[in-house]
Length: 68
Image (tube, rainbow, N blue to C red; front, side):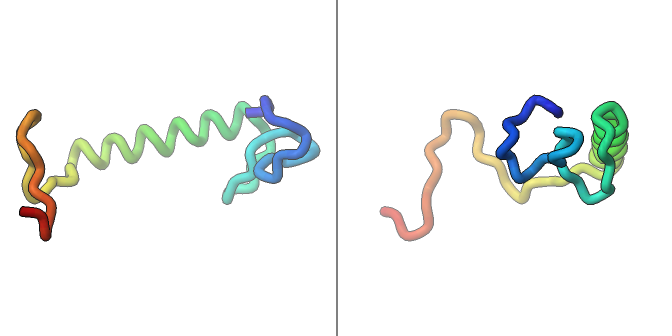
């Protein structure tokens, strides 16, 4: 995460770590925390998946609203 330019407004100028809502300024801690969030959300999606209303099979042309 510290691989950024010195002019990057999205990184902490003192540490080079991506600014975040949790205020974490240590790169290793931010990486671990992000991994924990991803793991938790992945588990939630397995338990309660987001279902699409309808999906066209691959190769089926899509019909756009208003097209002929």
